[in-house]
Length: 281
Image 1: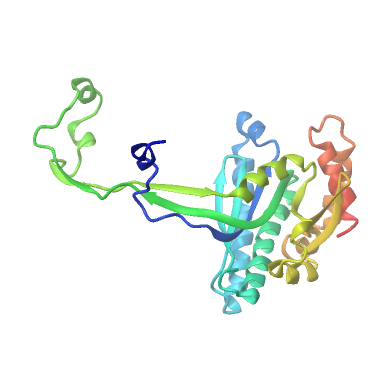
Image 2: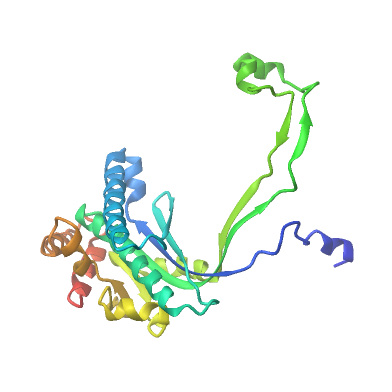
């Protein structure tokens, strides 16, 4: 590769750098069917219940004077991503424990809200370096529209004011921000998620001795279990649900047992796995 060829790989922006992060990817099973069959109200009510439970949790945390460190949400079709920054570089073990404990609480909010509505969801949690932020195009430019190039056909469809509102003749073209969010653990997450065949949100055992996870595991918010002969940690929805939602774990287990025996339910084996590992919670 010549020197000129290499120049095309020289960034305009400052170099992007990895940041420590905990992230979960939660997938709503059967989401495409809900959309295809027009059951949008089911999706909306699910999101509303999640939002309300988050509000209740936030109110509780604020009453403790805890106003910081809440996971961010990214919703993309049938998948919900939760992310929180961790502070490994700053060596803040206590803060990381708080971040992770609250992160798991938010995962349990999503999971328990789904179980309350009998919506099967599965998810995976991973910790690692992530490249997250945005890159910006070259600086904005001042432009003039004294002789604009306008297609006649365009003017037949839109009015002049709709195309160039608020004095189009001069102004700034804003810079373009290109967001990015990627990393090795995000790629691994997709493979992990495909291997999970159970309702629930799970975490690989490799994080057992991570300082960020210790308090959460010891507090029983996450429990060691086994799904399809694979050892994992699982969010303890049963422990959480009893305190926050007007739905008993016994009702959820009863539904899962019935769904697990329903040959017509495409996720019957997922529900049966929920019944099996719930004995460990």
